[in-house]
Length: 561
Image (cartoon, rainbow, N blue to C red):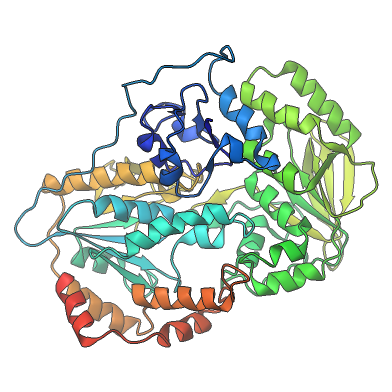
């Protein structure tokens, strides 16, 4: 039986290179890879070897015969990507396999190994470190301002999507490599500067993501009861910066402006039975609040029509399998109109799913999600706190008001300027050429400075999209090193270690993270994957409680550095 990709996959691409018959597309060297909502297995070409299952870092692939009822729509979705064939037609195995990208070859030279500082510890940072450490004689120092690594995989992936978090197993292997040293609880720009990092490394690579929200500039945003969806994501995922976020759940309705995947995630969490969430790694404070929630409807409002829905088809399929999702009669009419005109297969598939949704006029029997279209937000209403949103009907003068006690915006992420680096305010990224930071005034490279991930390309793609993005940057960096374009560091790694510890005595290394990790898992008591610490002080206390490394281990670690 053929294998099937069963979710909005991470687009890591490992399955592509593991497949012996090249039946998974688009491949990283094909034009559609960067924008594909997921990858697809050709059922006629699949030889059922299972190599892709082992390669997938998020457990998204399964044999067709082992799919759950909720996963069955993905059988047709995978097949629809390929040309229609007769039911009995088989595709002969191909000998032309997807080309495996070459690792960047570092040319050894006198003066010690290539030393690179990576700022950030999310997917782009981890993939960049993994790419660099394929070469012998490379040393990587990774800096993260929190005591815990992995960025949005820890603080952004929904708690009821545990399979997506399996990619951290790969990241654990990266952080365990001898050539990498973690500096957690250290903020570059506060505890150590960019110039100081360059003094001790040949290059500095920033993989700091796009941590800011795009803000909706309308009256009433800022009232109690308003926030961004990404702030709420950080709140229920236990991010220490947002643990105290006031999330008001005392009204029967919430409104989310914007209909991308983040909006769907937040709406699903707000309407999921808390008893189901109690088996996940959701933050305790969020679980307590959700148990007391009065919300029975979340409205996801979009400016444009159904055909322009921003969410991906796999996320929509997953949402309809997990929650009650409905449309107003007028929006059902819009879906039918768009379906009659749509020619793009992906858009048609989305519209087919939307056309089967329930009617919002039906009584609410359990918390539900209502998708609403052609609504442009005009203002948030309320005297002392939010009590609703006033919309214009897009393209008309008509007004519509929706009562709500919680109003969230979900209109995208935006990069934040990095101290000492140029910044493109319009695009929200650091200007670069293939990851090499460039001065937009002169067009010349900024010596020894590179970017990867969202701060490089903007907030697009999935977790694994950062793999090819980081690989491009690393190849650029290594080419510069091999060409002699990177200055030789004036300070050694030991000097850097002493500098950081003097400036930031509370710095944690990989052992500290592993102690926090083990303590969180133990707090789960075999009933939950983990119970997260949500305060930095508690994280540091857990790290301090770990057994100290032996003198021999400390000496060995020093020699390896």
